[in-house]
Image (tube, rainbow, N blue to C red; front, side, top):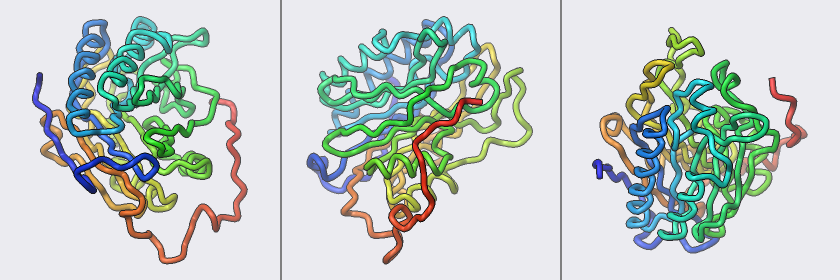
Amino acid sequence: MRPVRIISRLVDREPPRPGTGIRVSLFQGENPAGSPTAKAENLARMEEVLALAADYESQLCAFPECFNTGYALGREQCELLAEPYDGQSVKLARKLSKLHEVAVVLPYVERAESGALHDSVAIAADGELIANYRKTHLYGAAERANFTAGEEIPPVVELNGFPIGLLNCYECEFPPLYQSLVRRGARLIVGPTAADRHFTLQDGTPTLVPYPDATEHIIPAMAAVWRVFVAYANRRGWEVSERGQWEYRGNSGIWAPNGTAVVCAGPEERAVDSLLVADCVPCTVPPFSPEGDHLGDSRIESSDHLLPAG
C-alpha cells in the first residue's frame, strides 16, 4: 500500500452520535487516468482508503471527482470507461461500504442512453445506494463535449442521521445551489472536485490565467453565509492522458458553518496522498453572527427549478 498521511481534527475520541453530526474522511491522492488499467488501480486504491477510513471510525468517506476513471478524459475515453449506475465501480463501493460500515460518496462516469454522465453516488453504511446525482452544471467546453448535464437538482441525503447535500466541483461555486440544499435541510455539503492549477482547454492547451483557488474565498464564504459545513475533496499531483498533463491543486478541506477551516491539506500534502478526517458537529461551532440568519432573513424568492442546459 502506498503511504497515506493522516490529518485529523476530532471533537471526541468517539465519532458523533446519530443525528448530532458525522465523522468525515476526504481522500486526496494522485491517481492514473484514462484506461481500464487506470480504473482497476483506482478501485484498488479505493479499497485501501476505505479500510483506512474505517480504522479512524469514519462515518463517511468521500473521493475526488471522476475518481474511478480520472478526470482528464477525452470523449472516446469517457465512452470506453463509462459504466451503468449498477456497474463495477458502484457495486464494489457498496460492498466495501457494507464491509467497513462506512458511508461513501464516490464520483464516477455513468453510461446512459443520453450519453456519458458525470455522477456522484451516495452509499449508506449498510451498502444501500441512496442517491445517484448527475452533475447539472458542467464546466467549460471539454465537460460539455464529454458529458450530458443532469436534469435533477442536487439531492439531500441522510447519513448517520445527519442531512448531507451533494455538489460536484464547479457547482461548489454557485451560491443558489447552497441555498437550495440548506433550505431543504442540509447541514453538510460534500463537493468532490478536480480543481487544477492551469485549466486545460479542449484542444489540450493550458489557460494563461490559473484556475482560481476556490478554497481561498468562495468555499469558506459559502460555509459562513449558509451556516453549513462544506467538505471539498480534490486531487493532488498530476494526471497524464491523451489530452495532456494536468496538475491539481491539492487543496482539499472541510470548513465550518462560521467559515473557519476545520481541517485542510497544506503544501506538504501536495507531495503525498492524504486522508483528512474531521468531526462535523454543529453544536461545537460558535455562530458566525450574533443575530444574522442569511437564509431566514432573505426576502428574495428562490426556486429549485433548473433552466435548460447551455
